[in-house]
Image (tube, rainbow, N blue to C red; front, side, top):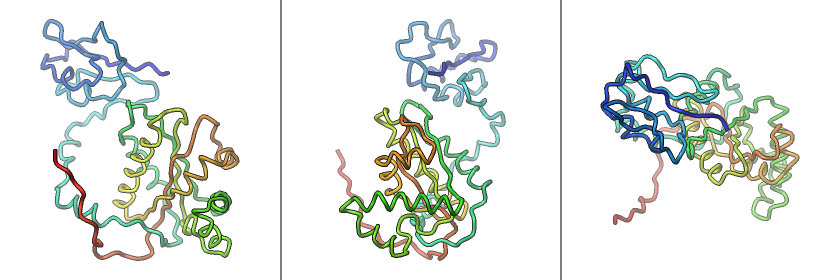
Amino acid sequence: MAIIRPCIDPALCCGDGLCVAVCPTGSIVMDSGKAVLNPGLSRPCNGCGHCAAVCPRRAVSVEREGQGDTPADDAAWSAWRLEPARLNAFLRMRRSVREFKPDPVPREVLEGVLDAARYAPTASNRQDLGWIVVQDRAALRRLADSIAAWAEGSPLYAAVAEEYRRGVDTMLRDAPCALLVHSRRDFAMSGQDCGVALTYVELLLAAEGLGACWSGLAGRAALERSDLLAWLGLPDDRAVYGGLMVGYPRYRYRRPPARLAARVEWL
């Protein structure tokens, strides 16, 4: 496992204790008016970066293999909050798109989306997710065929598989792109981590003018078909936990549909 540790520059530390207050693992304590690493730490630092993000003097950084530095320009991030009404409208207008234009999705757009999705939260800040982007038409067809082969053996999805065999792409909806997310098979929170990341990606895609729809069948098929896992190039200790069909929407939606009232209990 990669070594993760906070690094504190005592010359820059102003002693405000903010890093201590936000650290979830108790990795930092105050000593003689300065922040220092906790010598009696019982839980290891998980590399969340809260300490580096909160420090007004940039006195704290987090070392982790493969992880870059904290962005240098604080001013660029000062206006990150979205106006609530606009965000509310954006979330209500998001649609699960199943009808796509044939236009390819630019690689640079997907790269930007997946780069931003690195900031989706993961349990214990493991950051252990991987992505597979399928855009080649032959590869998309092979993926759809594999999902359909799995669905044929399921009483719940046999009818959907039969439609596919009749020429209706009920597996990937003729999308020009499919995204699959994978993580460790032996970690109890991998499914939740992947689900959160997929939600981030879906919203980011919508902001780029793209449509997406969850492909639950792709995740189920990849979990249960070892040949599909091998074709995707994943080792046995990894598992695909979900996917998205992606492309430019063929139709424009003009208003949000009705939804059931929220079920809430206040305690």
